[in-house]
Amino acid sequence: MRIWLVGAFSALAMAGAGFVGLYLWPIGKPVELAAAKGDPQRGAYLARMSGCIACHTDFEGGGKPLAGGLKLPTDFGTFYSPNLTTDKENGIGAWTMEDFAKAVRQGVSPDGDPYYPSFPYPFYAKLSDQDVADLWAAFQTVPPVAETSKAHVMVPPFNIRSGLKIWRGAFLDPKPFRPEPDRSEAWNRGKYIVEGPAHCGACHTPRNLLGARQADLFLEGADKLPDGGKSPPITSAALKEGGWTISSLSYALQTGVMPDGDVFGGSMGEVVRDGTAFLSEEDRKAIATYLLERDE
Image 1: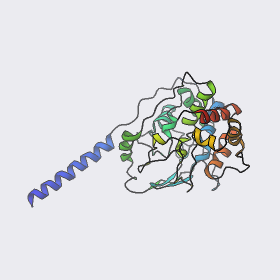
Image 2: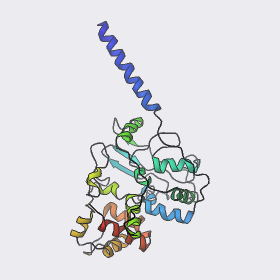
Image 3: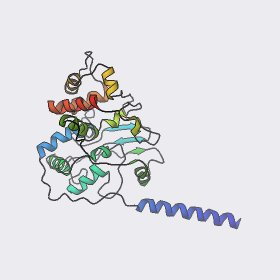
């Protein structure tokens, strides 16, 4: 009996020590952007490209722009997008640009806590220092909204935020954008948009049981999207088989109208409405060029 008690207490002590160690495990890297001067107009364009408006505005609930509260149900729980207005209590008004950079590119809060990967920071890691400074300048122009977004409602054990540090160690590999010198400027621009701010792979790449994207199936399509639907494959082969061209895909990203006359629905319809419709013709063609000419 005594041996059993000693063993039980030892196991509890080890588990407790492990939990404390996990809680104290530091994440994130230092950021220095104080000297960067942002362009709010370019930042607003990047915000549209990045889906900030669509994900942080509860249009159906009558929410104010970027005040958060949009519901995102998943198998791991229900997420609610946070308030990104300049309100100091409920939004990001008390943040610094360095706080913003760590959140956007590293997925780390100003308090050092990890963000859930429902926030597509692995894609935003490809944003340059200037991109981040421009986005920050744009967000500084957003009027404050004194509304608190709802707290996430997570399924155990995913409600233990510290556990995300293990997830990050296993699956997170944030890489900065690197253009391919043997490709055209338009192709590289499209690669940057698709794999970076537009985070197309977030919805068009299947995930494993722990919610990590399966890199070997990049853009092969996925099911169990938050709206309950599925996303089609948007690989070069799949698009060509479907009869897409650079011209028709670029037009669809502007209007939502597909070559057969039907229109995008569900999440993709919202992507067009709140995001790609605002992009320049050059950027829409760059996206189409990359997707249709990408090596697989």
